[in-house]
Image 1 (cartoon, rainbow, N blue to C red):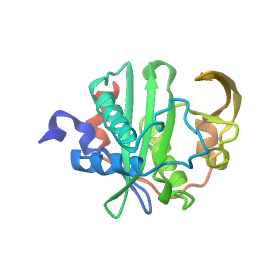
Image 2 (tube, rainbow, N blue to C red; image 1 turned 60 degrees about the vertical axis):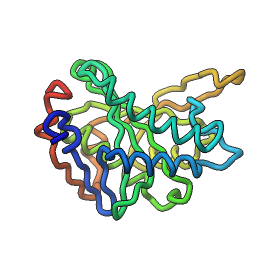
Image 3 (cartoon, one colour; image 1 turned 90 degrees about the vertical axis):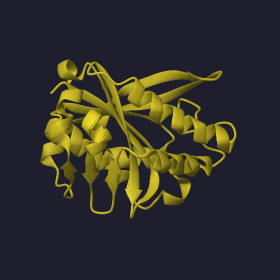
Length: 213
């Protein structure tokens, strides 16, 4: 069984409406098609990496390559866990939890995208809570980080609602344009002080060695 060789296939995060887990290949293809159908309005550019530019086929292939690359490049020193977000068995998008030198710094970074038809329904917040539960309650992270463009009000709202605080700014080149992002940080102390909906994480015990735990 694949999960015996790659235990992350046995890792599943359950929230009240969602299931977060590694997708099987046919499910990954469905998620890629979701991205092909659009993840933001045509006048928006919410991602620093321009993976949503180009044709629908380009977007779909970017999802496939990104997910395959995360698995192929996995190591204890630098890992990126990309999980599909499911509701009633249907993919809504993908979320990613990643870290470098986690056993030393104990910090993670999150990112996500949802199909445009699934936005504005609270799924992004719910999925983020699922990821953060894995990070803080099962991986013993000290902090979770994210970077958000200052005009990305939806993502800003999710982060602020979950207790992230300002942690400076970063300036990056996007083509020939300099863009400013807010760096936001959620500490373990802030996380433990909040009331949160119930989240269940299955299969983590077998995955510990993959994170160096």
